[in-house]
Length: 357
Image (tube, rainbow, N blue to C red; front, side, top):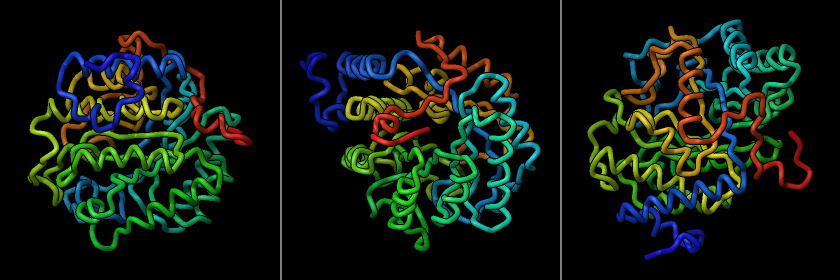
């Protein structure tokens, strides 16, 4: 039997394949201990604003892919986006995430630039802005950075190029996505990426290589969650070999959080909403497995049902205040504390020589 002291030396595969319930509890305990000893008891809030579901991409796993004609497309107004951001600021959120489907037309790029500038002006640059707006040109990334958004989340989804090609159309290029990650890093963003756990065709070795990819890319933030099907996508109904049940999928997702925390102690890791879709206490379990970020949805309620990347998404009928109150209780339930009015910069990023926030 492995002891607590040698969990930091366990191979990732040992963690992900572990089936003994007591051993798994010890793995989660060790990951949480590493988080507490390295980053403290704080759990950071990222207010999620899903500003548009208009997308030029056609990813096979995504409910808002451009070929899904059943989606009611929307774009929030500048005023609505700024109002949501100000809600976060007034509630004590340290940062927000502006997320949408991918598009790179001039009108959209300029609107995002304007929104960033206005939010920074209204909050005196006290509300950190993360963007999750997909693949763009280096010029666009630089424009948004200069406007005042200094964090970017671009999920790789998988580091296995063959698997990447199976879950995307032929015109979606793995090398282009990796190139974007390098461009973001070169510009100076705090860099976030992530993967989907439990995809069709995925293997345990793929997940192990994903963790190594995080290390080699020297990323600052990780957002990874379980694969949940959407009936209007090509991957719906495809066999999944890596797990046999939803309970196994949630357990594997938690083991991925723990393994990543053990391997990368300083990194920010989100307990994603998709965890809660599989388990009512999924996000709490994510925190207890080593995560230190939660992203409550603060989008206006009239848009939430139209931003369904996967089905059975929780909180689609909740108001922003409801989500805020719920998340506070969830974090307190874990015995940790909500870091209000804290930017929650990644220690991975701030410990690098010369980086400023």
